[in-house]
Length: 372
Image (cartoon, rainbow, N blue to C red):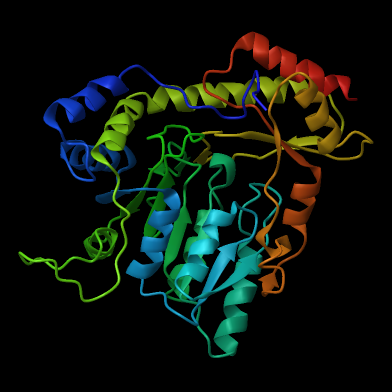
């Protein structure tokens, strides 16, 4: 249906057209051009990463990250269960085996205790995991101190799926820059968009060089078209990169606006018993891409609230269904308890667009409160 209020719509700044027009005027409309180079440089400046690669989607970036790390058929990859399916699917693309890790109840991200249990299990079985993929869910950074300690201790590369977390920070560093490789998404619903697109971040130039090679059909550097291995058509277009440049100029405003949405909902709904939100630690700043709430102890649950909002043309969604509960993954190994299942059962994502008006916020809060 056509909603009156969307969950997370694109928010154009008006600055994008300058770079798009430059691409058209110069006829750089292919997956190559000055906007791509500039966008990658600007991403590095903003995030603090030494290297960046702009690609066609966050999923493509994650696929390339696994390939750059040498993950291959039969390898074990430890993956956060509470996430969108695009986090897990690239593991299968390369023939590896996903093993799902439950969440902890504070940030809702990968539980370090469950991660440690899984690492010990596979080490004892003589099958060292090839990589760990964490997710900064809805923009909230995971417990990176503990997770980084475990990965460094056992020499396992860490991939940060920061698709939802551009602008979030952990101890003064941008999300996506603390692990070995970071992943960003610029899909239309993200905090900034290139209409479709993503990026891979890393301080290791070898990972970026390998990914860049594979993203351009693995073409060898000779005059004719020479290919010695399978590659992919994963590069971002120069036009899309132009959109990203204009969007990146207002990223701080978008983070401020999304955080303001969260503060409004937290204040407006705090009197409802049994309601809870993702919590920030002192050293963490979430971009609050999506404000999600957990409601327990009431007859009215997420479905009833979602239906009440839908009657008014307002989009909302359940929290992600855990990967270990999905049809194609439910028979695979998992570690941890049932925190992610509880979050899915009791959670709802509320409209969180950076262009959400005050009267729209008040209407949403009024509808939610009316359910109780």
